Amino acid sequence: MSERVVSSRPIFLATATVVVLLAGAIGFVVGTTGQNRGATMDIFGVSLFQMSPVTMALFGMILTTCVLALVFGLVTYASRYDTERTT
Image 1 (cartoon, helix red, strand yellow):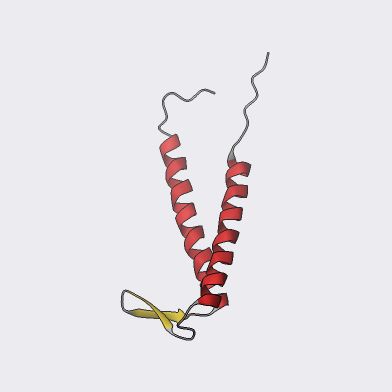
Image 2: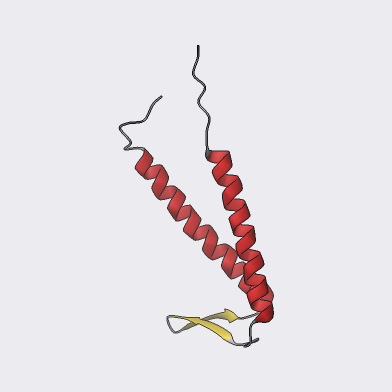
């Protein structure tokens, strides 16, 4: 009987897409309900952008994409050294 190898990449991609879209939705809600509309968002003393629903949604999506890419990249790198892996 032949063994079938199933890739988990489509599952990770679908999960990452859902998480990024949820981060955008949460960012939009935060930008809509924020008390300081029009105030600039400062990170480490650098003014990045004004807080509005669209910019908060984009910020959440970009930040989430970067974090997920880092995590998935580290998992891919670590899996190269998995000695218990079956082929």
